[in-house]
Every structure is written in structure tokens, then in C-alpha cells.
Image (tube, rainbow, N blue to C red; front, top):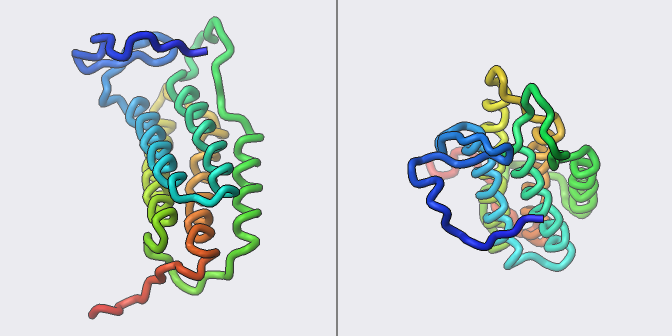
Length: 190
């Protein structure tokens, strides 16, 4: 369990931060940027929850907890030597739960005939913001995984990919199951 007695430590005053392994890295390091963007996604979801109906709120609460797991996963890079403890990793069951939530919400939605513009209800707008930040986190994770010596579990990448899909479907659900979606009209303002 994590205990936070002091909020400021001064250890990051020179622009570095510690990974879960204790290794210090620049705050501009791609791994730090990746889990920081996961944290941004979580904050956006927190905002969306202020406007979510109870069923969607419960799904989002589980996702917020998962995102802390994902942050811990990303903050604990796999190295040549196993750590002295069992690191927290995102697992396939978490990905599967998000898929099940997508299917449950999507069952009530009418098929789309156009792209959806971010907006509609306050919950939907916040979920669209969370989706775009999540997509950025996914792009950063993919870039990080492409660096030699940096590893990210397939489940972590899958989770981010499914989460952005979930957030899109959730935004439509929050827009009266798509009835309040704002649809893109190509060339409308020419």
C-alpha cells in the first residue's frame, strides 16, 4: 500500500523523477510522458464522471482504478533483472472487462452514418476529451515500445486501445444513446 506523508520531497527540483524501480529519469523522458498522459486521461474521466448516469459512472470508476494500475505498470519498466517484488501489471482480464463494457453500451446505440463531432451533453464532451487524451497516451506508449530496451506489455497497449474505443462509445451513450450526437457534415461551411 502507498503511504504519502509528505507531498513535496524536493527530489524532482532538478527535473528528474523516480520510476518505481528507484531509477531516476528526466521528467521529459518518454516513459514519464507516457504515464503522465495516462494520468491526464484519468483526470478527464474524473471530470466526465461528474455528469455520468450511475451505470456509466460505475464503469468509469473501474477504469479510473485501472488507469492507476496502468500508470504503475508503465512506471515499472522491465529490466534485465527481475525486481525484488511482483510489479503491478495490467492483465488481459482488465482488457476483457473494457470490451464487455463497450459491448453493453454499444448494444443500445443506433449505427453511425457520419463521424461524430466532440460535444453534445456535458458528459459526452468530457468523454470525448478523455478519448483524445487517451489516444495521445496510446501514441506515446507505441513510440516508447519502439525504443530499443524499453518494453511495454501487450496488455498495456491493448488496454489503451480499447479504452479509447470505450470512451467513444460511452460519449454516444451519454448523448441519449446517440440521439444528441453532433454529426459531421462534410463541407457544410464552404
